[in-house]
Length: 120
Image 1 (cartoon, rainbow, N blue to C red):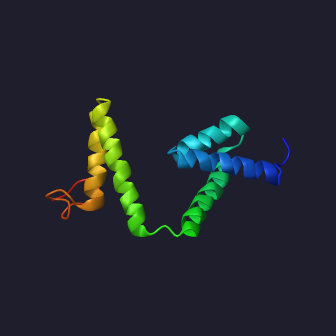
Image 2: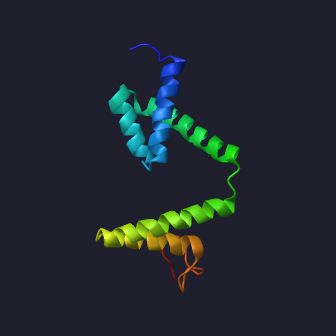
Image 3: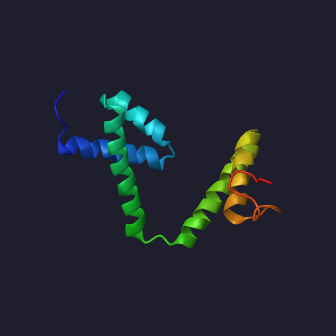
């Protein structure tokens, strides 16, 4: 297979960027690139790195404030918790609540413990 053109690379990066923004994990994106375009893991990660760089540039270009991002994150986590209750998926609700606790320090022990529990 020959070397990809710049247009092909841009199209692939845009597709990976769309997957990232839709909430797909890095592993899912790499798997998608390997299946769709026949790329190796290494090549897939290179394109994924470019896609993440574009996402980062988009955030910096819009001038999103840290406080605005925090508000958006809280909103998304609360919506996820609500969807978990609505769809009878307690693990989704618990996960969203744990993330909110870690983000905001809502729990009784949240200031004394690390991200994934506490040690004695």
